[in-house]
Image (cartoon, rainbow, N blue to C red):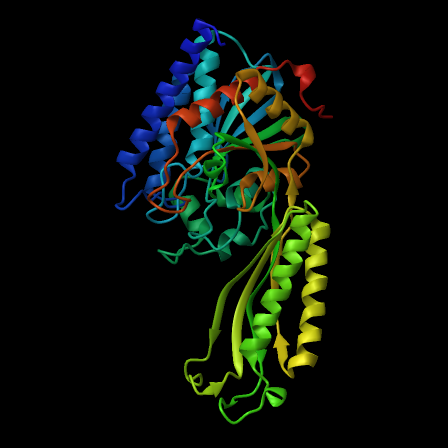
Length: 432
C-alpha cells in the first residue's frame, strides 16, 4: 500500500496528465479525432502545452536543431540522463493517445518528483520526438534519427510532406529550426551519457484488453520483410473445358502459398517463437478475370514480422522453398518483386527486469510481449542505447479517432515508471 504522501504526489502527476490530454484533444481537434501534422500547427501546439507543464515541474526546456524537444529535470548526477518520451504527431483524424501518452507520462513523472522534493538519480529528460508518423514524410523515424545524428544528410532535401509537397528542410526552417545543422549530423543525444531510453506507449492491439492486464513490458520491436507487389502468373482458360491436371491456376497456386506460410507460422508459435504473417492484398486483374475463366494472374502483398532475426531468415527460406515447390506442382510462375523491411530491435533485458520489479512493487500485473508496430525505441536500441517500452492497455485499436486509454491504466503505468526511475544509480545499466 502506498503512503498518503506518495499518493498525493501521484495525484499531482495525474492531474497534469489529465489536463494535458484534455487540452490536446481540444486544441488539436479535427473531427473525427485529432490531427497533429509533423512540423505542423498541431505538433507545435502540443510542444507548447507540454513545455509549459514541464517548466511548472522544474524542468529546463531546449530544442535541438531538428526541432526535437528536450525537457530536463535535474537529477543527482547531472553528467548523465534517463530519457523518457515518444512523439506527439498523429495520423490524420487519429487518436489522442498514440505517442502523446509517452511524452505526457514523462512530464507527469517529472511532476511527481518535483512535488515530492526528491531528485531522480540522473537527469530525467523528457523528449518529444518529431515526425514519427510516416504518413507525413515517407521515411521512418525522422525525429529519433535526427536526435541521434544518424539521418542521411540528403534526406531533408528529398523528403516531401504528403499534404504540401514541400521538403522536410523547408518545414524545419519554417518552424524555426536548422536543417543545415541536421545535414551535418548535429546530435543532441550523447550515447555514452544516456543511461536508458524509456517509451511508454498505448498498445495498438487488443491483447492487454482481452487478457485484462493494464500494462505490458515489451521484449522487442518486430523487424520485417515485405513484398509489396508480388505476382503469380498462370494461364487464363475456360473454366469448364480445362481439366485440372492441365490448369495453370494463379489463384489456386497463391492459396497454396498462403496455406504454406500459415503452417510455418503455426510451427513457429508452437515452439514459442515470435512471428506474424499477413497477406494484406490478394487481387486478380479486373480487366481479365471472370467467373467462367481460370485465373491467369494474381497480385499479392506480403508482410512478415518477428522480433527474432533468425525467425525472419527462416521465414524467407520457407517462402522461397514454397514458391519453388508450388511453381512445379501448379505450372505457374511467381515474381516476388522488390523486398523491403526493417531490423528487429530487442529491448534491454536489464530494463525489462527493472520494469517487472517496479510493477511488483506497485502491485500490478504486467505481460511480457512483443511490439508488432514500429516505435522510436527501435532506433535507440539499434544504436546501442539500453531501451525499454511500457505498453498501456487501450481499446479500439490505434490510428483512429476511437482510441480509448483509461486514465486508471495510465495511472498504473505512471506509478510503475516513477518506481523504476526512483531506483538508485547502482541499479541502472552501466554506461562507459
